[in-house]
Figure: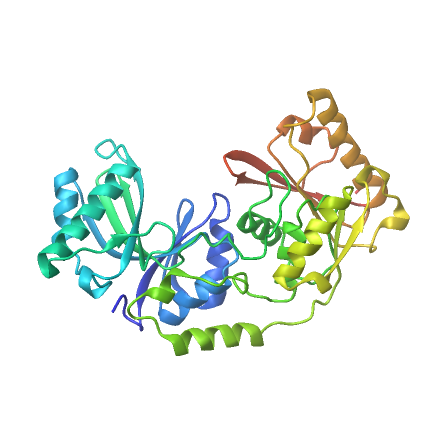
Length: 386
């Protein structure tokens, strides 16, 4: 058995800035002993929770099950412990395939690829000792994906229950340049308090990630409902009946959104791309797509008297500094002139440009879009002065 069905320690990776959001999601799923860390949340639960976490969590990147923790003083100690102290035959057969992902923050172990290689050698050599044969490596779709995390001398070996990163929802067929990560998009919505109880608008929707994630939240559609594969499906203790029940329960909880979801973009190609991605996600009928230039929006184009507006404008990659300042000034002007009564949230790594919005933020959060540290700012858009 890979884990005890009644109780297991679970580690869930996420993006920096989304740890508390993920902790709240886990609380709603019924996890116990929830402990947020840096880009990770630890908790405890049963096998049903493990399956639900992979299927339903919106801000999770990977769901891991730790199977060993020890101090590794050098490569020989790492090899010896991995080979002799972990009962690999309980987790896989010699005919199965494996892949090793390693992350190191250690003076002793400076290269993650070397750590992955030593771990693989230890497992393979142990199977040779037991069976005179060895399992093969498959980096794309292994039977068992193993995660090695070394912090200084502390080593944790985990089984990766997710397989591919959970931000691969299975719906994105096309994307604009530098699309928003699905986990980050869902995290931005949840940080903004979005739960479908108000109209939603993304006025620069690009490939549609924000409105699609909003539609999934509003309809209570599981984040991984379009994925066809998870790592745990190939585990020795996989419970097909339990997995089917988890999926059935998730589908039974879906609902019709109470308020509309709008996606605008100035580019016809982006609008069509968003529509195709939404269709793949099964939420195309829940989103109203329209072509609009944000700087040309008038009050008559405003889709509702109030609601939540979340936008991911260009940061500065393709605009000159003077142009980006004017661009953000235009956004602020449109907020004030067209969207009084709404709540606006803007994410950007360009701190100088954000100042050009000319608005006072009521909340400030720090998140990361890839390697870029971004500010995520909330604006209460009032009629006149507050």
